[in-house]
Length: 412
Ligand SMILES: Cc1cc2nc3c(=O)[nH]c(=O)nc-3n(C[C@H](O)[C@H](O)[C@H](O)COP(=O)(O)OP(=O)(O)OC[C@H]3O[C@@H](n4cnc5c(N)ncnc54)[C@H](O)[C@@H]3O)c2cc1C
Image (cartoon, rainbow, N blue to C red):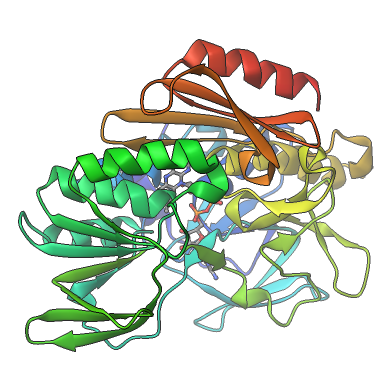
């Protein structure tokens, strides 16, 4: 089996492949593996903008901000099943002509496919600003994490704009390094929408205890470079001056390259239950599938409403469905005879010594209740919508979380 270091050296310039996967992250890797596992024997070409073979992103907002890590430290092992996959790294796809079954690189190279998989993930949202890059950060790639770690040190004032999971994790990691951290969020309590009020408040109490200053109900209007730091103008008229800013404002689908294609792009690239890309003109592209964070998929737990699930399990679970679909379709079989996508979504987050694990869709709940333990300590919270249990989040208490996960899973 080759190691990750073998990948970049196998750069090629093919002009066609039976299966072209755009985006070289976790979703792309798992799709290639799943297609081979399902018996797909055609050529596979993976094209990715980053220079690295697929690597694991969750540590980027956690351990990679505390100690120096490289993409090799985070690289996924490459199984022998994908030995014959061709990789075009450091290559962005600029546009696609789905009617002609062709994608084109930013270097104007045209590549023809029989099957296309869209696996381009998401792009972090940014504020419009001309602040110097060493004072203004996002955390999406290994280079982002390395740059943020190297350009901040103990005692420096860092503002994190955005109170989602990545913002909260970055806050915890930078506090561990002794930075003076302010978390700015527009809502009442960071993570309230996903976790519900009580659990989110308990988490915020912990951040305060660790020394994070929380500026809730605050919007940043402008960022300006000054000699004494970055000046952040807030909606309430105040100005905060910090040494660096981290923008953790959520993300948009990395789908600009599909702008000329006949596809539906909303919160993600919309698919049918078998993850085939929907046409804006109606119907689906039978030879174009979508995996991972970029996909907007119908799901039984959301009553088939189409949603984006930007968590680590999604590329893995969607790749399984798409690998099987590509293999079946190459054999001339009907894809809709295969099981549709229905995997139970899951995510975790690590902040300080807290490990939080979720199953289902707590963010779509209309009610939640404490099931075990107590807020502020280890606990399990159940989430329901119209009286139906649809999600669970646990801080610790893994076996209780798993019992509820099984209940939710059985009902799908
Ligand atoms: C900082 C961070 C922390 C996270 N922590 C957690 C966590 O604790 N728990 C959890 O469950 N999930 C977490 N996640 C989410 C998880 O990492 C993602 O769900 C997962 O990486 C998605 O995989 P993907 O393959 O769909 O997309 P990605 O990993 O985003 O890969 C997509 C790739 O496509 C490339 N690409 C984009 N556009 C083009 C183009 N036009 N041409 C060529 N290539 C292109 C991108 O450069 C990228 O390399 C975290 C994510 C981040 C960023």
